[in-house]
Image (cartoon, rainbow, N blue to C red; front, top):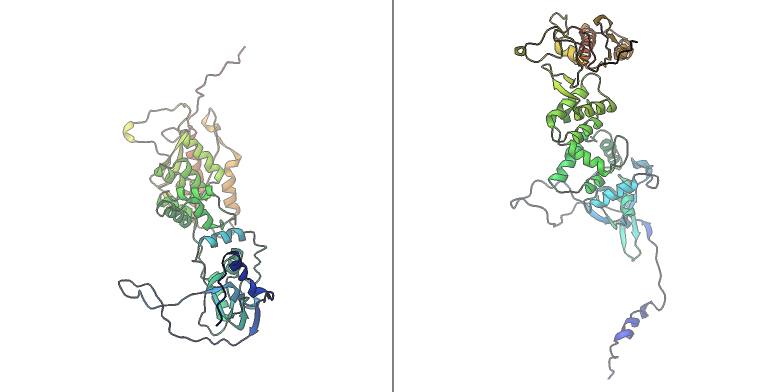
Length: 427
């Protein structure tokens, strides 16, 4: 009667496990062979979400986790992004970071059986699938060293249906969010859901207007801009004010929504202010050198607070209220006074003071906007527009003269005197 060999222990047991490799190790490369793949529909039991014990609705589809080793890109002629090169993509690193932060919620790739089998290094044979859209997701998963991808098998007659769908998604179906929607989303994510600015910045990946990566500062500005009033955000959404306008007022006057709205109207009316022009206005308002007011017609005006002394004939009756910034035109042909006042805001008038009313002049640069408007008249111009522009130009002169302290309460030009005494040059 034979006895069983004694059980090995210690180092002998560890080294004994390698005896099965005494003949050497053969590394088999993945091998691809032709094979027929039949697509069929079979029932399967799986756990899905129920609401109050019932399905939310009819099941529309399902995804699969497939090892990356079983996936290849479809032929270039059936890929919309067939020339995509992740090595030449300057934004690929940011893209992979955003993809990685999604975890298992990565985009689902459409695949079809390749009618080929692949023999994996462990000796198992599996079907090979071809990816027919979003090759950048495939390259991103490889770069992240992921081992599997989410896929679905669409019920289509041929790959052309997937190509057509991809073209529609990139062309007709894509709708980019506006800057206001991005700002509101950033604010919601930060203040309500508790995401960090870094996480929000990583998901945005790039600013679509100039294709640059958003900084932490940009996301910070998005959050504070979202706190502006609805009217200001509407002006930004319709591009009547710039991102720079909104950022400047939100940063300078964060606790004054009324002033921000007044500044937004001032920047948007007529010919939209440039960022530099707006920055000068904001600086004057911040330093209390001027204020912004909205008249009855809804037109914004910047009112200087350091007007010089002037010789005017009669004092203003306090019962008559504030001196109006503008006058009305009761005998216009077509244009309404409100339209004239809005058109007046497009002009930048420089008034040259003088000690005599008939010597008060307008600087040549004041006619720049009027010359540009005249130069653009290549077709018939409505009388309403012509009247509004020309009367608006005169109205702009009146408003500028009043802002310089040249116009008195009766609306006529009055001579100025300098409040600082001058030294006499007489011998």
